[in-house]
Image (cartoon, rainbow, N blue to C red; front, side, top):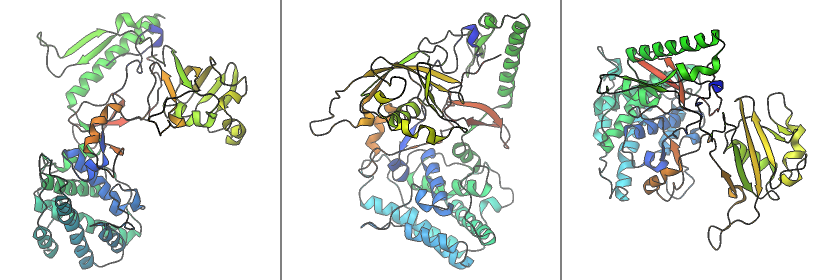
Length: 479
């Protein structure tokens, strides 16, 4: 916990780089899962495959127009058509076919292709009999419908099959009454969460992934929920109040710029110190001199000003690389471009297509300093333009694409960009999924990403939900 006040010359929220989200190759999610988060992401995509309006938006979707036919897509499309129209017997039969295709036929197909010959654990398809007996036994009661059921119960393999059938039949009833597909996955939707829990656990049984998740723990992973102890929250809240007293006292003395002398950066330790303390206060850190937010550091941008258009620069660099959402660009005292709700896009239509050197106010040339602002984020940064016309080729036959022909010097904000250090994950990718990754929903066993701000009470006891804000770069002031 810390106090942020620019006038006190202390570190702001953006002075330290933020950890990037972990990413996993799609082929890991689809073919070689090894962690609970992998199968839960897969189950959420399975939910999307069955119930979302556009089936092709699910990463499990397979195009049937190719030479190699999918083991399950025809059944998925059939079930989607039957959910709102067919009788219960027909729907249960199709559900059985789909579960067999996903947890037996598809797995056996991958085994026959020797996909898992180097895997630590070889998957084991669930026997067909396990599904057929549940489909035939219409009197079986899903575990969530049984008396004494608790959200912390661990379901057996048969329990998961029974629950999956029950969830899809329940969805069918909703669709027949409402006549439309179900909404997108929501962790607070009991049907959706039970479906994700049982279908992900079935995949865990196939791939030998432990531990098997209860409804409670699966919701934690699928919904980005961090278990917390009420007393810890109370302690942190108390520390915040104590710091607020210090801030108010300085404000009453008209000395708000002296918070560094009285406020503290407090670490809440998991293990006590030698003296038996769990709270470790330190002086508020000084600002990072390279911080683009509170230090107004100038970024160096090198590119070919004769080839780059302003439109490409806005999309590729200002928004994607620097994280601006509604930028305004100034050359000297002249505003040459701005975005916002009340701004007419046609007003700048003739400007955005121009080369950087041909822009108004003298254009962007070697040595030009531009100012980029974003009032929605309370963000401003100066950028020095450096012209470079010659760019090296990747190899003898391949030139670097124009949108990759730039260099940003100095520390820069990064919004939603995957950590480049995850290159080691490419060993898990197959030839069909090269370069494709999916961002996971954050394993609850890891430390909370420092980008995630604000704690909101969840419906479950002793649980708080970490709400991840958009990638904004707004300095939070204490006064």
